[in-house]
Length: 307
Image 1: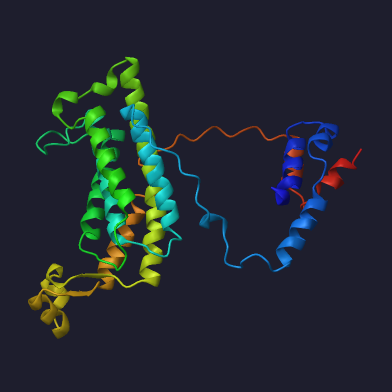
Image 2: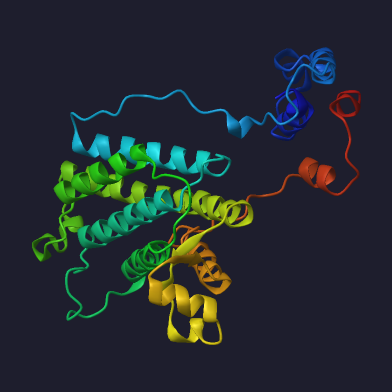
């Protein structure tokens, strides 16, 4: 906040706020910045302390309304995945539970919007619904690749609890049964509320996928991952007597790099929102904004001193 006051003041001026108003609301915090710099240089703070190491204050999950509970559970899941990026006890089993939640969210959202996800005999959906179903399949394939992996870290019990509650809530508000087809086209308030909750869940899972991808990247860089040798294919153990022996003895072996690369690639497929975001029309550029963007950076004091 202290470091961006000048930038905020300049942007306020570009938005046609008068400079007396800017000076009244942003009087200048240079003296506070000096105090902050002195404190940081005092050496009392841990050099490794980072803002993302601080957790948010937990709030209780509201269970009196299934739609509200779904939102609360998913919000906590996103918070947990954000913390996984820097947590030392990272667990691949937890990432598998998170991927399972991703499968459930997209399957139930697709069913709500008319896709028959319980059978493959019906025609494939088109447009946005097709992309929603494809994203669910991407989460499913990611979970399949995560399942055989093992790491020393234990499964997160809170994530497992949220996964169970999320799937239960999704079954209650958007069953996978074909009888729910075209339910999203109804206009009653309850249906619109459920639709908004599911759309929000799909958007939130994109953040979850991004954080999970970062967490998996850190795990592969700083930890050792294993998988059962029996899950390796014949091509993978060819010319590898150690892997062949482990395969026959049904032992764990180090996860081969191609498998880890495949998981990392699948994570890339779930990091963005599955539906295209409308591009807003370009805003008109004012003369003063053109002046600011076409010249060297200046300070708020230089702008205020101009006639």
